[in-house]
Image (cartoon, rainbow, N blue to C red):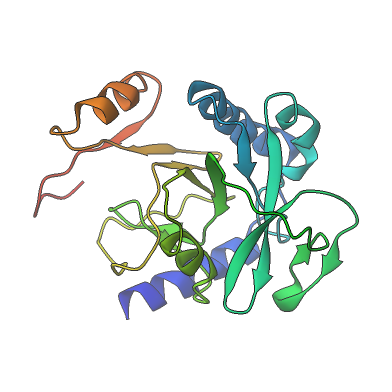
Length: 210
C-alpha cells in the first residue's frame, strides 16, 4: 500500500510539473555523461521520454561521441534492446519506439526513468514491471542510473525484492549514489571517488534512518 500511495502521489506531481527547460535536461545529461566517461561505457541504454520525463534524446549527438545508443522495445511483458534510430512509432501506453532491429547486444550502462526511488535505491515505476523483468532476466549487471524531472525519494523501504535497483539517482535538484559494502573493496574504490561531488552516499545501517 505504501508503494502504491507513493506512486500515485508522484504521478500527480509529475503531471503538474512544468515541462522541462533545456538547462535542466542538460544538467541531467551532463551528470550521466560524467559517469559514462568514468566507467568507459560504450553501449548505453537510454529512453524515449514521455511528456513529464527528462528528454535526453535531444543530446544524442553528444552521447554518440563516446558511445552507441540503444532504447527499450516492448516485447510481450518484458523489454528487448534495439538501436536508437528514426522514425519512432507510438506503441502501447503512448510510448514512442523505433522499429525492431532484431539486434542482440549487451549494454554497459542503462539510464532509466522512474516515478521515484526508495531508501534502498530501488525503482518505483508505473507498475507494469517491464524493467524489472528485463533486468531480472539478464545474466550480467550493467551500471544503472535512475533519473526524473522532480525529486521523489522515499526515506522508507517501500519496494520489493523483484524491483530493479540502481547505483545512481539523478534529478535536476539532487544526486544520490549507492555506497557498496565495505567487504567489496573494488566497488568501494570506484564509488568513493564521488564522495566530494555527490550530495548523498547510501551508507545507512539497518534500522537507521537516512
